[in-house]
Length: 328
Image (cartoon, rainbow, N blue to C red; front, side, top):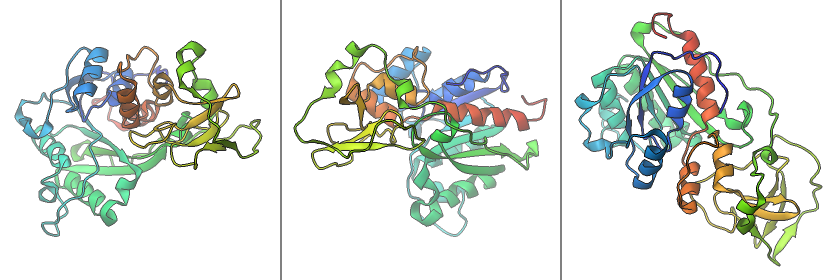
């Protein structure tokens, strides 16, 4: 997380939909905003959220009555990427029925927050030949919002991970915000080695030694803002590749197999291992004070599905800059 000195969202309230581990919440609370409602259906994730924030998110969003949700200034949502069935050419609210985005839309229609702040996978922009994004944009415009989007990579914002995501920021039309700029990229100063646990006893069980380990001869001496592949185990599949800690991490994933599944393998002290869940947390911007799921397999999946807090904070700062003084 970034240390915030100017809390540009002080006095604002927000809701946390598809809350996951609470990445949006950590980001917006660091900027002075207050969470008034959260929703997350996954039970193990709900439990981790409660451990860290003290309140248990409500469950299945499809069964939530939008009238019961508290009023709020900002709606945050990292909803799943789903195809929309085409009911016509309107590309709006009715086209979103049958998807989880419809539940986001009906809450927006009822509560009409000042700002809608959403995140999704990079491929969301091209999903279903662009139709998915078109429906979301059309729905927000139909509901009275000005829509802004951009694809940002975490590596351009201080986090050594190749993680591209689409971010969408929508302002209610009466705010009269016609221009919005996403944060500018800046040079990477830290690499994977700066995010590793110092206590080797915590990671000893992660090291592997296999006869089918092969290195490619690349010297592990130079720093890079890209992943540096040093070798493989077995046939070198997605979870069987070894990287340098002087580069950046590959995209943390919720799924996938191989000996280094979900994090990739790294050469550390002349041995190879995958990342520890705490190291995954760090590479997603979570502070060390954040309490992890006791199940490592669940923790890997949860961080693979999570959001990069630093990027959300930087976008939040930009949101605060364009809000009228009376709103922030």
